Image (tube, rainbow, N blue to C red; front, side, top):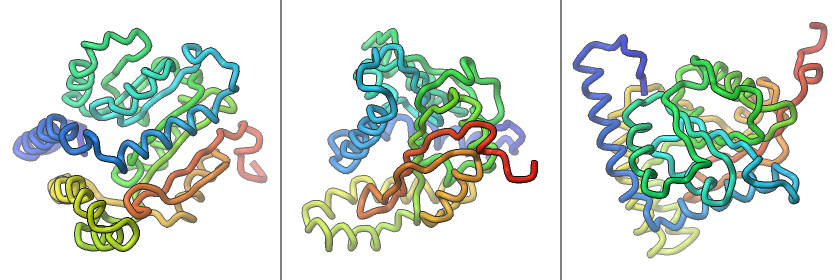
Length: 255
C-alpha cells in the first residue's frame, strides 16, 4: 500500500479507509483460524532454530517488518524474545500499540517506519527478522531486502514468507477440499473471501514468485537459503529460512 503521501487526496483517503477497515477486521478473520495459528507456530519454530538453545530469550532481538497490527510480534514477545515491530502505515502501528497496551509487555515495541527507506533504530543488531508476506506487494523488493540485511547483525537469520500465487477463492477452496476435506475448505472461506476483497481494493502491483525466483532474490540480496518449502492453505505461500552472508561472500565475483 502506497503511504508516501504523494497520491491524490481521494486516493489517499481511500487507502486510509482500507487500512482502517483492515486493522479492525483482521483479528476477527484470523482468530482461531487453524491455518494461521499453524503458520505462527512455524515462524516461532524457525526463530527458535535461529538462536542457540541456551540463549537468554530476552537478549534475542527480533524485528518484525510490515508488522501490521502486531500479532506476530505479540506471539514472539510472549515467548520471551525482545521484539520490535515496524510498519509504514501509521494507522496500523496505532492499532498495534493500542491492541497490545493491556498486556504491557516491556519486551515489545512498535515504530512507524519503512525498513527500506527510513533509518532503523538498532540497525545491524537484530538476531532474527520476520517478513510475513511483504515482498509480493512492496514496490521496491530489492530495496526492501537490502533494508532487511542492514537491520540484521552479521550472521543473523530471517524468515521470509511470500505468496506464490493469488489467493483465488474458488481455486484455493477446491485445493483445500481435495487435500483436507469439506470442513477445512469451508473454514478456509473465512480467510479467502475477505482477503480477495482486500486485494482488489489495494493500490499496489502484486508480485508472485516461483520458489526458484524467491530463493534467487534472497541469494542476490546476500542471504543464504537454509531451508524452504510451501506453506499455508494448500501451499499458497513460500517460506524461506535464511542466514545473512558476510560481506565478502555476498559480494559478486570480480568486485
